[in-house]
Image 1 (cartoon, rainbow, N blue to C red):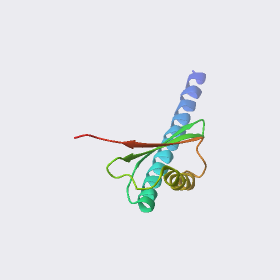
Image 2: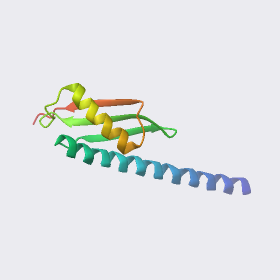
Image 3: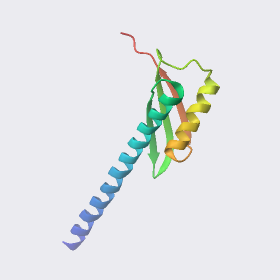
Length: 103
C-alpha cells in the first residue's frame, strides 16, 4: 500500500512539473510573437517544442498576406535574434513558414 501511495505522489509531482514547463513554453512563445510583431510589423504564430528540457525547435508561421517584405536571410536573422532572446537559448532548429489561407 505504501508503495502505491509513493507512486501516486511521484506521478502527481511529475505532472505538476510538466504543466509548469508547458505554461512556461506557452508564455515564451506568446512573448516571442509579441516581440516579432514589434520588430516586423506583423504577428506570427510561434510554437516551441522541447524534449527533456532541451529546446528542440521553434516554428514561426507568418500569414502569406502579411509576411514582411524582407529577403529570407534578413527575416531569419531578425526572427532568430528574437526567438533566442525570448526563449533564453538557441533552438536546435528554427522553422520559418508562410501559410496561405484561400477564402
